[in-house]
Amino acid sequence: MLAFAKATPDTEAAAAEAGGATGGGGPAAVGEAVERIVSAVDESALALYYGKARDNTDAADRKAAKKEATERSEQRSALRSALLARASALSPGSISKDGGGSEEEASRFKEAVGEMKAWLESGDACADEEEKDSHALVLTKYELAMGRQGSALSTLRARVAAQKGGKRSKALSAELTTLYRELGFDHWAANAEELAARNFPPFKQPL
Image (tube, rainbow, N blue to C red):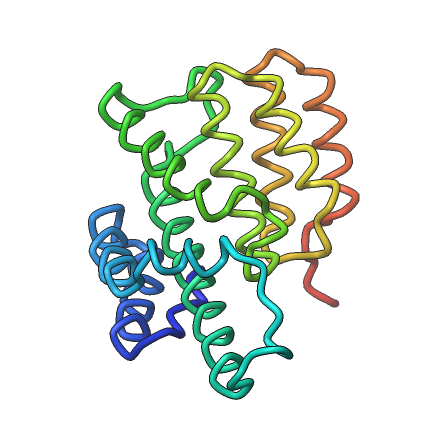
């Protein structure tokens, strides 16, 4: 999931580790790689840079200004992807109308989402379609943990409707069906299952 770490060699190495960790290393493995990326980015300097309107065409040294703009953009992308990865790793393993997990796990997840939202409020800023899927699922689980079931449903439905044939289209549709059932909308769940059967027919070996 992590196609980031562009700012420094340190973040590149950490990204490779985090990418492997998301494949089964668990929150601890992801967290260690993410922390290396976060520590390599000066968040205060980055916030200060993007807190001002800039026109590099009027800069005294356009080449230096362009280089800085590129570096800042890469750092921001790396930070966003890292924070998303951490929030995703700490999210409940499955959709649950009451949020799922223990009180301590829920607290850590909420804190991670708060840090993520400081830099990645909207899925439009995600690096790719796969990250947009992860972002929507993280926010859905967050809204459930906060007791905002209507907002959770709206978030996930919007992402499923906006998908453009991403790798996780089928999986995210299944998550939406699960959410329907969790909220007691069995008729909607049945309709979603019928739609998924049409959109994702089982593969048949050719004769």
